[in-house]
Length: 246
Image 1 (tube, rainbow, N blue to C red):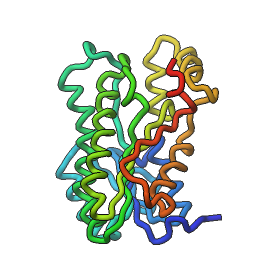
Image 2: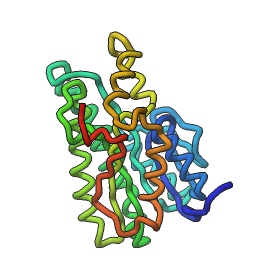
Image 3: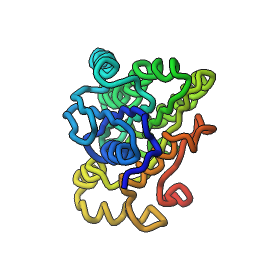
């Protein structure tokens, strides 16, 4: 049975084709939202699906204009698209740092600049940025990714402060290890993927990897009116991993 928690809301989700983005899109749609999804590959999870690279400013501007023409002004924005490398600082070139930052952080900036004006005009809206637990921990094996997520957390707080007088809320979700293709790729890059998975699970006191649906349920709360007095927050969803980082 469908819920009407997000009835009459229009939500745009980057990275909607798989993993966390796909789960959020399905959750929002199940709860009454009109969903608009996009990615470098055109997804098939939403009411309206587009191919668009969040790392390209011109493509994002054109997408925003098309959505206004063909669908409606946006009420909810979710930035779930992300790229990563399993690499130390010395294994990551400055150019690769910039590529990861361009999608994970500058991508969020592009989306806020493109869609927040519609929310400002309405005097209400919710922006949700998908960060990572690695933003707050030294992570030698994910140097560029972790650094980008640290920047994204700061962006969340700054955007929340700037947009609060306009009635627009900005929050971030910081998952630990979520069972997604991105995580599978990190396991596959190691010598023994099954051992890597087992060790990773052991870092989470609740004894399992997170599911994309776990993150989607938190995103639903941050998107709906029940969280109307929450902005500038970074929500850990990590199976207890931050309690005893191991």
